[in-house]
Length: 140
Image 1 (cartoon, rainbow, N blue to C red):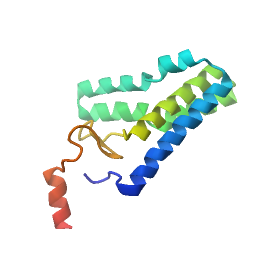
Image 2 (cartoon, rainbow, N blue to C red):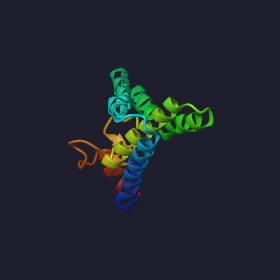
Image 3 (cartoon, rainbow, N blue to C red):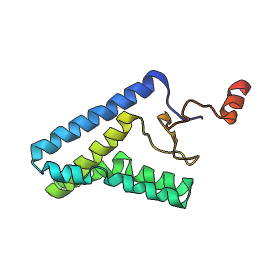
Image 4 (tube, rainbow, N blue to C red):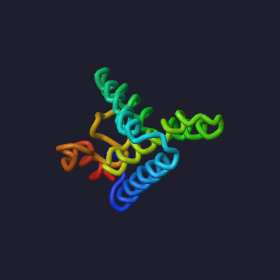
């Protein structure tokens, strides 16, 4: 598939995700917002999987909205500027979740299906190359 990241760049992006997970978790601990709340809401962005019930295009959009750093960073900024510790906590938990997913190799989704991400294919058949990718390689 075109547009996926491979090799060393993929490893670097996954390590960045791990760094974000650690940094967000450490920052969360410094604000003393409670680990029960962290655990309760850590998987909340995964509710976006429900978008896949409406098909792969809507699923990819809903997943990407919930797994993009844009909303999480907006919460961080709002939480610091207002000041609003609850919003700040939401942003930190959200960043930690995204970092966790990236560290595991779950990238932003393409509309081809759930297993097609910007970090490469995921799932049981991640090593199988599609015929279209093979034909594109031979024509270049």
